[in-house]
Length: 257
Ligand SMILES: [Zn+2]
Image 1 (cartoon, rainbow, N blue to C red):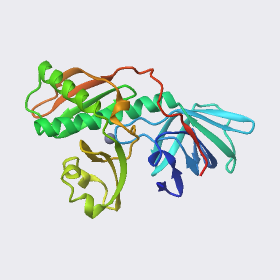
Image 2: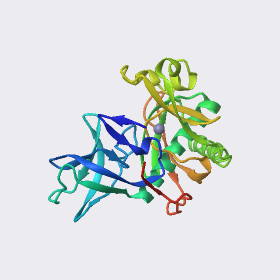
Image 3: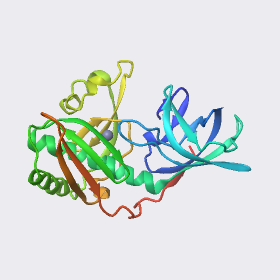
């Protein structure tokens, strides 16, 4: 279980958890820290979760989750009454939004795997919102036709149903893995000795702290909607997922352990 400063972060081991019990650790201006949370704190290009924190006699809207001094911080709408430290709470994320984000995040990994495998190009950057994303590649040129070709190859791979696994590797092991080197595992701060890796088994492997769907089938169809040049050896692709309102195949469960 991932912990940071004694805080249990459930999303890192179970991305399909939509709600969980916890206790208020600290209440500071504009936000709440919990000892245990289902909310994903923004990072690695993935947006932070939004949702609700409820307790006996009240509830507050979480408008973002960010990492502050290494800890997941629930940002709340200003002016709302907040629970006292020690209060038992129930956190619920906006699951539809998170699930869309998980599909989008997984699509980006698959895209990066396909472009590297078939064109040898590394990723130079990327960002996502639920359902839409962009990724930049170390490519000398790009065209509409190239975007279409990549779209076709990407969708072919997604429908093969690769499974996505979360694994942990010792830093020394991770630094020997060509896929992880390609995705710049060396840039992870040296004090991090255990590297969390998202393995789309057979397609892509990256050190990553985010949440992803369990199978590429859940991503659905992806369209490359734009290709553009962002400079020499830096070309951008924008993608969009279809079927954004489709319901998650897995019923979110309640965190109890
Ligand atoms: Zn990622």
